[in-house]
Length: 201
Image (cartoon, rainbow, N blue to C red):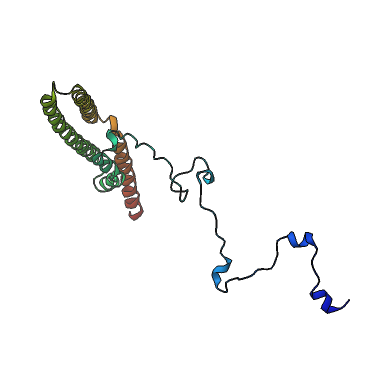
């Protein structure tokens, strides 16, 4: 067959309907290899994932969790202290039962002072709410009801804090965790100090 006839040979109709595999007008820069993806839809997000993990999708916000009394910054700061290290230091330096008891009483009194501060703050807020209740009494039943509810919540919290103050004086309640850490540290410091002296002796 002649080469000239092959170059001008007409393609069959079925072959003309197929998409062409030749690429025309391809840019010569490096971005020509980038594939554009369609934008995300809510159906693309796997169920149960955090909003932070799913890029570009807005998921409904969850309700904030209720904060309890133990979430107060003052109590968090109290429990974040290194009572194990404090007890270890006291045990290695003082080494007596009296020192252990005095150290534990120091932890209890510090805890009671934190709770007393929280009680005073809540009492001041209760006084302000009581004043507002007197101002709004008779004008709006809904506002008065909400103020009474807030006062009842504050009184309940004050009662719980005062109960913890009383329990702490007996070494019970919330303070027990800090006391246990202090006592473990004291025992460890005492043992280490005695072992060190035995090694030297």
